[in-house]
Length: 318
Image (cartoon, rainbow, N blue to C red; front, side):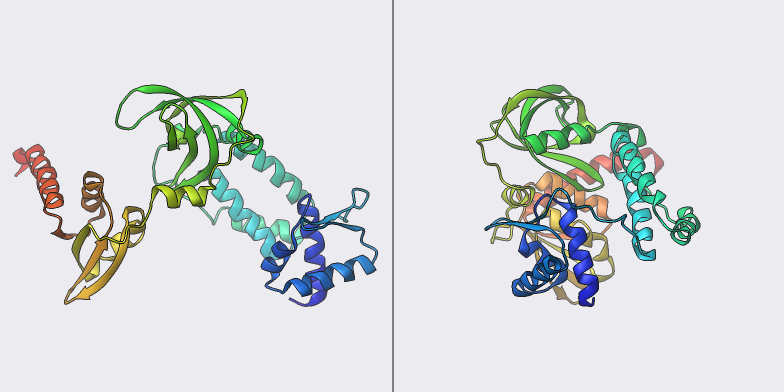
């Protein structure tokens, strides 16, 4: 990217937030802080009213407005990908808001970009593999975003996967995370006096309550995930997987405490640090990896029990 294009991009970035930190600009364009300072000075010399807060960042003066934003071909196509993902990975409220924003964006596209999107629209699809479309009509994403921004407490009625009963929880939300094709709310649960991971499609009802936790500091989502999924040094599980079937474990092995692996003839020895053997056994059976357990013996026993139950269920078909 040449300097003129970078200066224009920095100007747009300054309008995207109330305050933009120098290191954010440096990280985006892979430039040094000294170069950031020179670029800001160049914009100021060009008549752009840029303010600065010492130790905080830069901002545009309120009386300055950029001309309408123009999109490139590639940027217009990226918007379409965003539309397709939002359609399948959010609820009706977020989809409606996103579509409204996208109509406004499309309105300022040049005719060529509009035609480009029309040609691509029916040729890009995102499938929702969980197959439970009816559960995603409303996931309270809007309310949770409000609570996160305001550090506001939530009252939720939650249906646990295992207890098969609904419980009322008062929680302090710390973040949203999408993994395994589900949205999850990470929060401090007052009922359990601990951090909990709530799947949004299991929240029966949710309301914002007039209580705040502005003085309390919670970990970020990344810090929370490291907290609840520590990687112990001690290997507790060792399995042998045929080399041609290792690929069936690659997408999910890190969620089960994967530590490392090594080639052993026609197999790969994979090692995990995980004390939740029942959950690990279910995952192993579901992967189709044909894994053989080396240790612990308890995991082998759990797998044998599961397999016996499965055989018993289908005995009459044998």
